[in-house]
Each structure stands twice: as structure tokens, then as C-alpha cells.
Length: 79
Picture 1 (tube, one colour):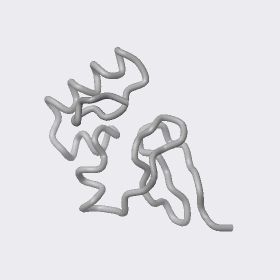
Picture 2 (cartoon, rainbow, N blue to C red):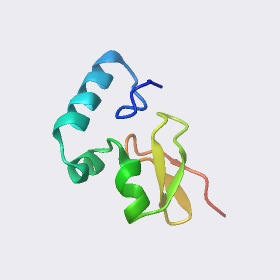
Picture 3 (tube, rainbow, N blue to C red):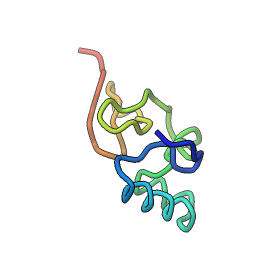
Picture 4 (cartoon, rainbow, N blue to C red):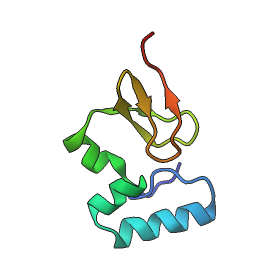
């Protein structure tokens, strides 16, 4: 976790630098497509979920599960 509101989570310094560059130079839609700052458009396009247990990104509803747009892991759901 970082103190930068534009880059809330980073796995390494290199990851932080690239996330910062994406947040600085990509449009909001492009950021959403690559999994950077997904909560800005997620509130508009889909329901926001809990943080991913693998990488900390905000997950999005995918059927009855929560899917992470950053790392692709799936959690929760109903059986």
C-alpha cells in the first residue's frame, strides 16, 4: 500500500513506477482496461467489490464471484 492516492497498491518499486506513469499519462478508460485505478470507472460501470487477496486491487463482480482486473484471481461467490 502506498500513500499516493493515484497508486494505492504496488508490488514493487518498478510496479509503482509503471502504475504512476499509467495514472499520469493514460486516459481513465485506458487505465481501467489495464487495471490501474479501476475504482474510478468501476463505480460508474459495475459494482465495486472487496480488495483482492492476492494483489490488493479492487475486485469487480463477475457472475456470482469477484474477479480482480489486475491479476485475474477470483474469490467468493455462492455455490
